[in-house]
Length: 348
Image 1 (cartoon, rainbow, N blue to C red):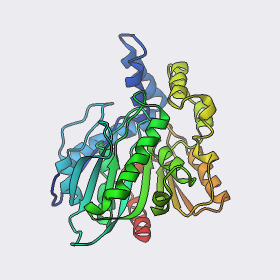
Image 2: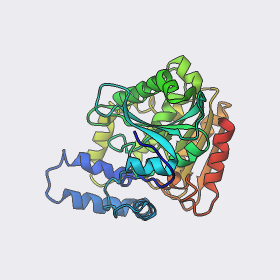
Image 3: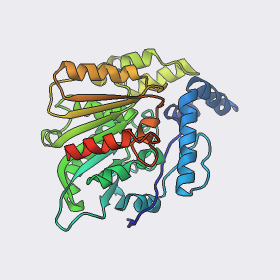
Image 4: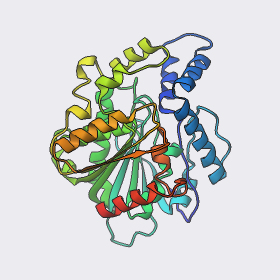
């Protein structure tokens, strides 16, 4: 637990797809496989990879942190995040018995005695096989959330191959149940905004576009959902996988999702119902990892069913950039962060 004044935060990961590499190492016994795979990924996702590395460098400079290594996760020191967000941080709060079943909870220092604040819950990405709540990219925008009058909660969850997709969904569901039952002890009310990036957006979307995957009382407590740069139609996502070691990656992809037969059932675009939640979708126009057609497809389906939904297509932005510009300190044009705060205030 850390206390805060004012300062700086940060966290980021290497390009989401780069995480596939670490899993591949357990399948391929080639001395130079890392160099080959990283080189091919750079070529395949050139803009998103170098955008990501540039963001990490800017974070390091802004927060006075050591220069990050290319392609490596860049973790945010909790004391820096606490100072930057002006929040009290409860770090690695367990929501289950497993090592990865942990939450970070940031409570604004401005909270008054007895006051109850709405809760913003963030689910990180990482291609369902990696990522962490403590990466710079996933935590830096907490400042905007906290200053708007929310408690910020971010969660870790088990990933493939430790568990398959059903286990990942169970972890996210378990974390939400824990927050519903316990957040009042941290000054929170049972009024939630959910947000996910990349694979995290897919998970959040799947749990919220239909009303039967979360317990009814928890589903009713979710009022707004932010979906950032996610894949929402896994049938077309699988068809378009164009990576080095493509067949191996596809086999892993199908094993993760427990067979091709499940892809439609776990694709949010095919599960949409008419529900009470407000949806805000955002995607970078230069996103090579999850092309904007994925976001457009879900947006159309939400609107077709009569749901309240807005979509933002961000020019010049890649995969990680949709998170980067949510923070006014890194929103160079000064356009996206103010809109983000306005939407949050209206929901709160």
